Length: 453
Image 1 (cartoon, rainbow, N blue to C red):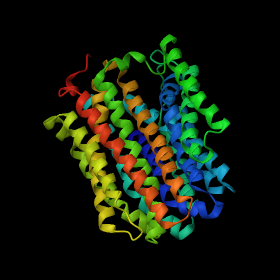
Image 2 (spheres, one colour; image 1 turned 135 degrees about the vertical axis):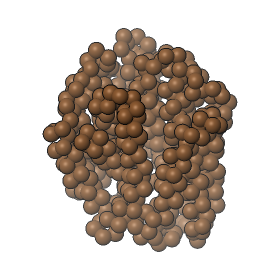
Image 3 (cartoon, helix red, strand yellow; image 1 turned 90 degrees about the vertical axis):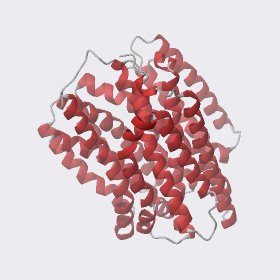
Image 4 (tube, helix red, strand yellow; image 1 turned 60 degrees about the horizontal axis):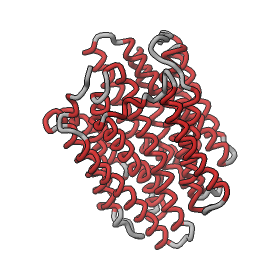
C-alpha cells in the first residue's frame, strides 16, 4: 500500500506538470494572455518546486513524513482547484505556484517514506524503481489524456482531473502511511531558503519581463536583487551550522559537472515542450489531442531508453552516456530549427524521438554521478540538488527561450513567429551541446567509483 500511495504521489506531481503545455493556446484565448503570461503559468510551478525542493524533504524528516506528505498532496489538490476555477490569469498563476509548493513536499517526502518502509536494500531498490517509473508513465499519458480532455471538456478539466486523484491518495495516506521522522539528521535553514526563493524569482522576472520592459527601474532593481540575494545566500550557507546546501559538496569536479548537465538537460527540453505545442496548434491547426499524440515519440523513446541507461552506463561509463544524451538533445533541437510555416511532421517527430533518446540516456546517470561524487551520508542532499538544478534549468529555459520567441512573435506576422521559434530552438541546442562538452571534459571516466563512503 505504501508503494502504491507514494507512486500515486509522484505520478500526480509529474502529470500536473505535463498536461499544462497543451492547454496554453486555449488559456491565452480565454484570458487574452500574451506569451509572457503563459511563461508565468508554466514557471510559477517550476519556480516554487525548484526553490523549495530541498526544504520539503527536511520538513518531513523533522516534523513527520506522513503529515507533510498529506499536506503536500493537499496543496496540489488546492492549487489545482484554484486553476480549474480561476476567473483570470493572475489566479491561475497563483494556483500553479501553490501546486509547485505541494510538489516540493510530495516528491522528496514520498521517496523518504519508501526508504523507511523498505529497510532491505534489494527490496528498496526495486520499490524505488517502480516509484521512478511512474514519472515515465505520467510523461507518456499526460499529453494524450490532457489533450483529449481539453478538446472534450475545455482546459479547466485538466486541473480538475488531478483533484480526485489527490483526494484518493490523501485518504490512503491517512490510513496507511506512518508519521515517521528523523529529527537528528536534518535541520531547517530558513534564511538560506528565503534567499534562494528571492534569487531564483528575481532571475525569472528579469528573464521573462526584461525583453518587454527593457532597462526600466523595476528590471534593474530585480537584477540587483538577484545579485545581492545570490551573494548573501552563499555567505549564509558558509556560516550556518546546518546549511540547506553544504558548500563543501562543490569541491568535487564530478558533482559540479553533473549539476551543470542536469540544468542544461532541462533548459532546452522544457522550453521545447512550451513552444512546440503552440507551433503545432498555430501552424498545423492541430487539435489539442492531436498535439498530445504528436508529442508521443519523445515520451515513448524516453521510457524505452531510460530502462537501458543503467546498463549502458556500466558498460561505457557514465561520462560517455551523459555526453551522448545531451548531444542527442542538442541535435534534436537543431533539427527543430528547420521548422517552417508549413509544418513537416516527419521532421518534428524525428526531432522529438532524438530528444527523448537523449533525455532517457541522461536522466539516470546524472543522478548516479552526483550521488557517487559525495560522501554517502550526503547522498540525499546530492540527489535533491540534482532535482533542484533540473527544475531551475526548466524555469530559466522557459523564461529565456520563451522571451526570445515572444520578442519576435508579438509582431503577429507568421514569418516573425517562425524566426522566433528557430532562434529559441537554436538557443536551447547551444545550451544542450555546451552541457555535453562540460560533461565530457569535467566528469572523470571512473565517476561512478568516486564515492568516498
